[in-house]
Image (cartoon, rainbow, N blue to C red):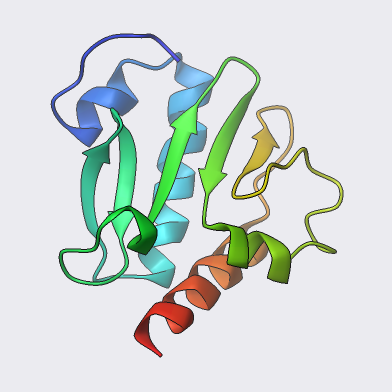
Length: 122
């Protein structure tokens, strides 16, 4: 949310308003539950999680904080696969917005990450 240069993922989280930070930390927990070997890094100055060792952008899940929502960027193939379940959320081709005033859909997020991981690992 705050447009400040960050050097680590924790810097990014700590620069967010409390409500955004809490939601991002929860989302991080779900990503790491689904993909415990994921490497955490910054990509485009937002948190990213590589789903395969040394994974480039196409092999990452990214997240970001905003004023009224947090964004999850799992990849267009994942978005298409879960289109029906995501119908209640604002979406883009490769992203979904989870409003800060609603609980995160834990089960759905974990299934999305595992689905993306399964496509990458074959």
